[in-house]
Every structure is written in structure tokens, then in C-alpha cells.
Picture 1: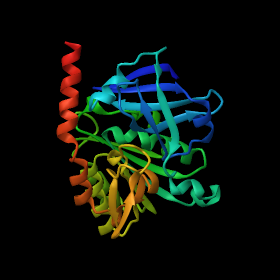
Picture 2: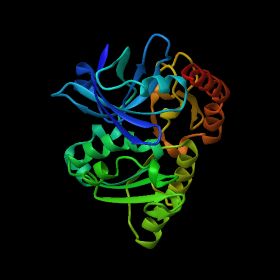
Picture 3: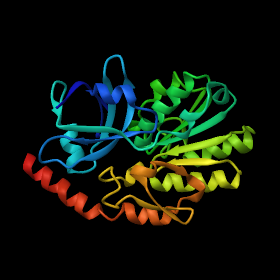
Amino acid sequence: MYKIVEKRFLATDIFLMDVVAPRIAKSALPGQFVMVRANETGERIPLTICDYNASQGTITLVTQIVGASSRLICQKEKGDSLLDVVGPLGRPSELVYKTDEELKQLRLLFVAGGLGTAPVYPQVKWLHERGATVDVIIGAKTASLLIFQEDMQTVCTNLYITTDDGSAGQKGLVTDVIKQLVEAEKKSYDTIIAIGPMIMMKFVALQAKSYHIPVVVSLNTLMVDGTGMCGACRVNIGGQTKFTCVDGPEFDGALVDFDEALRRQGMYKQMEVAANEKCEQKRI
């Protein structure tokens, strides 16, 4: 059992939890994830490690209510426990293998969409501690869905906010901000790292390619069992079959077949909706 020692509301249907998991906290690296199960009736779902504190033995998880299993997790309160937390899993960000001196020479741009801001934060924090120059774009549909703005502001060089409806920051899409930075402000970046909705990452990757900037994307939203055995997270990367949970979750965005990934992402949508409705009926 993994005790929840802190729980916070971040945005509509999005919650942050600090969970006691000493072994994971000591070995986790930016970009990795855990498999979490609320109780015996819940499914195991992948959650990116948003932060970790080795001295306190805790990891931070951010969960959005999407289906029945994520709802079970979000219904837990401070003092409750999660049945299973397994990890750290997946390959960490390639940036962790660079020396501090190499990192200080880089100019990086992170593009976070919606809940993707949660996995972006630990990477930016880790890079900040090593002296890297990191700009961050956070995008959301509306101001009420923005998360981690204050935390991100303390660890990045420049923070840009954009919302679809203009309720916070600049009105428009993250790609509009990228265009502004690269074309109008003439900023140069060694790499763009995009984490968020699949469709957002597709267009960020296309844009980065047009600017001849290397781009990395995280396909964590495809993962199901976290072991590669179910095959649900199978993706085409440069003509080769890869499994997101064991070969990723981060890949070269220029090589990802996003159309196939989007089709695969929609495979379980009807089952997800049905399970969520069943869970809602039980609460009535």
C-alpha cells in the first residue's frame, strides 16, 4: 500500500498527489512513469512521475479524471492509500545522459499542452538545476485548465502562456507562439520537446521540421499495461515498430507516424466512456 500524504486540486478534474514510495523516489529520472492501481477493482494506469523527493521518499503524481480507473484514483484523499505503484518504468529523457557543461550550452524549448505540463515540469526543473537555458510554452483550452504556471515560472528562463479562448496569456495555439519566437523574435533552439495531446504534438513536430529544429515528443497517452505485452502502445517510428512503454515514451517527433498513433489512441474510446458511465451510475 502506498500512502497519500498530500492531495491538491489543480484544475477541473485534475488532482496532484504526493505518494510515499521511497524506492521509486530514489531511482526516478525525468521522463519516466509508474503504473498505478487504486484498489482491487481498478485497472493499472500509467502516470508520469511529476516530481520526486528522495530525502522524503515521496513521488508526485498528477491525475486527470478521464475514465473509471482514473476516477477511482482521484477519489482517494490525503491519508488514503493506493494499492499498487510500480516503477520507475520507461526510458528517461535523453538529456539526462549529457554532462552539466553540455547542458549549459543548449537552448531548449518545451511545449506543454494541458495535462502534458505535469511531465514537462520535472524535466525543466532538473535542467534548471544544471544551468540549462529553457523556454517553456504552456497551452490550454481555457484559463481554468492551466496547471503549474507558478512552479514552472521558478525553473524556466522564459514562460509563455497561451489559451484557445484568450482567457489567459496569448489567445491562440502553442504553434502560434513557436512561430512568434522563431520568426519574429529570431530565437534559435537546439531542440524542441513537446508533451501533450497527440494532435498538438503532431503539428509541433511538423512546425519544428519546417524550421529544421530537432523535435522530441512523448507518446505516454498511448500506454496501457506499461510492459509492452499488450501491444496497445505499438507505434511506427521511422518505419520501425516500437512500443511506447518500453522503447519510450519519448521519440524523435520527426519520425513518428502520428496518423497511426491517433487511430490507435481512439481504439478504446467507446469502452472508456462505457466504463466511466458505469462508475458514475454507482455513485448515484
